[in-house]
Image 1 (tube, rainbow, N blue to C red):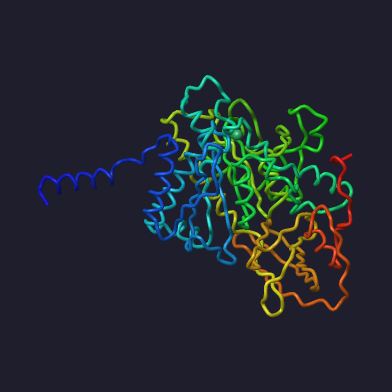
Image 2: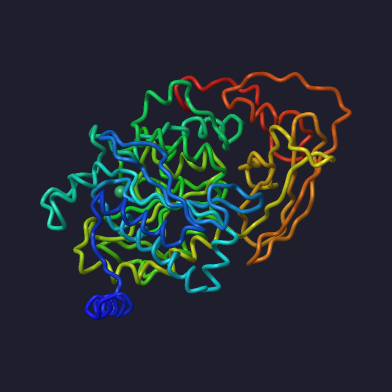
Length: 459
Ligand SMILES: [Zn+2]
């Protein structure tokens, strides 16, 4: 090697060591390169995969972190971050790329907190759900005159108003009895939604996600479900009322974890708005229909909140470093929240998988189901709970569980085959799930799977 070349290489190495992390906006090609760069730097704990394509044919890439990428390990929860659903709200996209680089770098530095996180969690990062909208916004740049340019996808559709509306079922069920979890998709849902939405729905149906956040901009607040108020139809889109889920206290805590770990969100005064503790119920801010976070809660096991992260939807490049430092701890702490409550296996006496098992917590009208391998996760605040596992054809099993503040409590269920006669099952709007619940002699809530399909929403 020539002296000149080795001097150059040494210089390059020196530069690499002292150069600050570069903060810049990433166009699509740059984003893809960055994901693959992280993939190549941390090949043992990462994987890049696509969940589908945008209207313009751009791949919706996800970067996965796990000690066994590409595999669901039983009792290891699945977590996701989604950015840039509104193409012109770009901070989330940049923060998620920074997060990806940070996780990889700290893994390589043997940072014990990050090692543990990657060892115990399967993390999925979708930095841009709307790459087409982003390119339109980015062509205009940070000094945008049109505030909404690039918000929608290439078909002009707002993706956070594009998910099937399951709230209507839910409000009906609240009134007349029926489940508010795993509500079914309309038969023709695929033809009713945009390609990006379709890809995300298929994605969240194919993993048993437990916790998630959807990153936006235009305000600074952590927003939790429901987004849609009960009075949505009769009111204008502002001055709505609080619309809590059965998991309201848990959602408030999750939102506070983010706001208090964030540099300034918790202060509440941001962008000319005030939100106590830097959090808000979605509907009490303004009601929106067909949003992603309500869909996650009503259709899947996933608890999702929406993070509004910057007053300026397209911050200048010079602001990115401050934003990253303001969000870094919050992004990690929120991720760590996936490890709380209870988790375990639901199997039969011979450790075989059960079909249609459901985990219910007394006093919280929102059940969860195990994944394909029989493991379930139920986020809960510290406290003592009565938890019941049920499956059709098996005797239900109820236990009392105490949940602490840190680690999740392990609660396994091994159900015995029921000797009772088989109950007739009827088809219901909520499909199999509700019918399964009927089999049980359940102590608490009334759930009537024989309910009729709502005519046109709540009366
Ligand atoms: Zn948004």
